[in-house]
Length: 479
Ligand code: UDP
Image 1 (cartoon, rainbow, N blue to C red):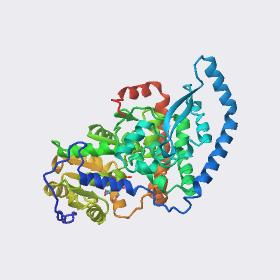
Image 2 (image 1 turned 60 degrees about the vertical axis):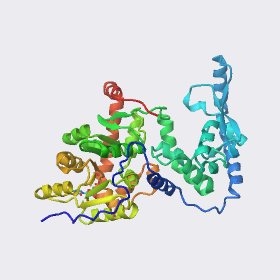
Image 3 (image 1 turned 60 degrees about the horizontal axis):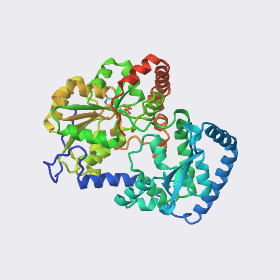
Image 4 (image 1 turned 90 degrees about the horizontal axis):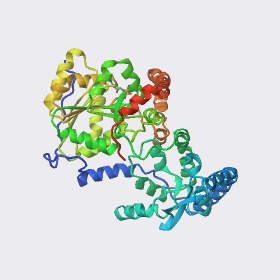
């Protein structure tokens, strides 16, 4: 008996011959991507909008005066140190754009000491150039360029810039694949006490990692290793471009995601480790991988979770004539995932689907159906490492251009498992959310697995030889 459901009928496509090249996005695709980004803006009311800026200013003055008093001994010490080192000035100032596009000078000490260098920014807050909370202050050239090409930047320019904001939180969590201007303009339109309090709370993990491990360096290596697993250290946009490029390329490619649990698994299952070595693209997923990157001084460019990447990939494939096949999940789940794709991305052709609980005897039938479907992209959601090993073992017979393992993606799309709210993901606690939902299945994976992973990371960090070997592997640097 076949375990596969009948293949779905394909949906009429506008231009089947169109092929997407790297970084070439049609207006339709750009529009879908923009909608995805705009959806990220938090809906809020304008109820307290008129009064709140005054309240916020009072809070800024009170806190900046408080911090200046507390840090005054440090101010004096650093000022004396700078004077004694014969530097010409104690402060350096950088022109930045403030509220209503007025230029101001942002102060810093002329010292290289990370923690104290930016202390004089408290003076900017006291003067009203900046606020504690608000969009990043940008240089005049950056602001004019942004205003030129982005109407949304106008909203951002009407409010006082600040030190921390939604984008800052996303950036620290490596979830910054929503453009900064989108989040900033959303903030400008709906600034409130509640929102600012939420920003302060959500920024705490980012502030802690900043204090412990500092800011990421200006450039990122394009390929790194975390516990000997190779990671292609790229942005969401580049990852989607690379997948689309592979869809046009010769042969079949395999794409994998890697999170702390998967890295643990790669130690336990050598075959899986080999598959990761062989894979055409290995993408970093999860707060733990991001944290490991910071601890090992190999920062992760962006945290590319499969559940976040899949809708963006669908947007990129919309209207290109490219087709997908969905394999995995309990019986009935892939059907619902296919429904989800058709409802949200009618421009993507779904060639077929099937569940992931087939027997070894049924495997050849499953492979034959996928090969005959003529799908370009195979999306497999059967959990790690099963899906990676299965793809690798069957890639030559599947007749697809790209096969990707997405873990529990279909359960989310089918609505069987709720996704953690955005703020939970931003503070790196999605695993806690999942653990609460399925404690019996996941306690070992998360409670023991995360501890083991961190122990391995610190072990590598503290072994100079191993640490240096992995540092030497770093390939390329891109901004
Ligand atoms: N699964 C499957 N076939 C199997 C074992 C699991 O299709 O033989 C599915 C399962 O129904 C679930 C997914 O694979 O939808 C694994 O989910 P999990 O959350 O464990 O994935 P991961 O954490 O690896 O992303």
